[in-house]
Length: 383
Image (cartoon, rainbow, N blue to C red):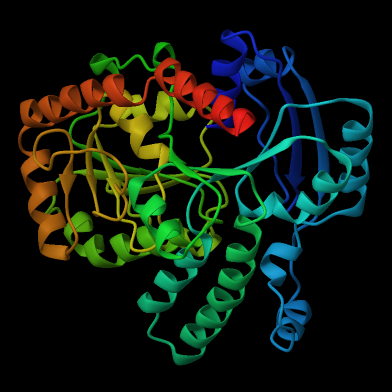
């Protein structure tokens, strides 16, 4: 997503600098793709490693504090020092913050950078925690998630009002910010994709097949696919739903291996080439039960002409038409009926996928989105 934005800006002749936190939470790190490396060579790029692990002791002690430790763990003095040095020696028109986790550095940017500050919201973060709390049956987990949601909300609303302007992916997020009385102007700018990268090849697609692709260190993803596996494990393993299911993504917990059934359910883990993996499968499932914002993986799946079955929450912000360019399912029965229809009618799946591609070409082409972004920047500078 960030790479697409950078490429779009570069193609329009703008200069871009990227400062990135390399959050070392896990023991393995996938190498950057050739495309990413080529893109990074065209910009000034600095990455700083930080450790965002939280020990059980820290998590317990956080219960007795009033601030949002979940956000605080992304603050690092070394990174801030590197950022300040850059701002002291170079002048920027816009500094854009990608998501809530980098907002701990806004004070430094305000102090040392004579620039306009733009916040690009990936979702309303505290809503993710609120929705997770609703899904939990365990009283302690529900209480803990509500506590975190309350703290993050207080922090989030305070930080948002410190920016000169805000960009969101969906009209739903824009409406939420307006309801909260956020003062900076809010503009809807959807996910943009470089369509030349998305080239579906049906000769390499297994039909029927179901797949899920997403990082499971993000709680909404883990919660969603775990619900799906628990709900349809027997239907998939005994052949009632005659299709293989592939689960892929980063940081899949070891206990997910227990879901594997030879020839039926595959827990693949991290894949070398995400688009190649998506192309090789037919039907994408997005069983998100919490979160918000726009899911980039859905837009990419549409670009690859996948037939997608998603909850309405998972497809939030996409101007879809159910039954035409996506299938919406919010209950076990609805998911079952959609899956059964898709795995027994290949042409129907292909038609949904073709229509999905057309939708993305019209609304999510990076050239179109970047032109809107630059116009937005200009408004901010003129304001």
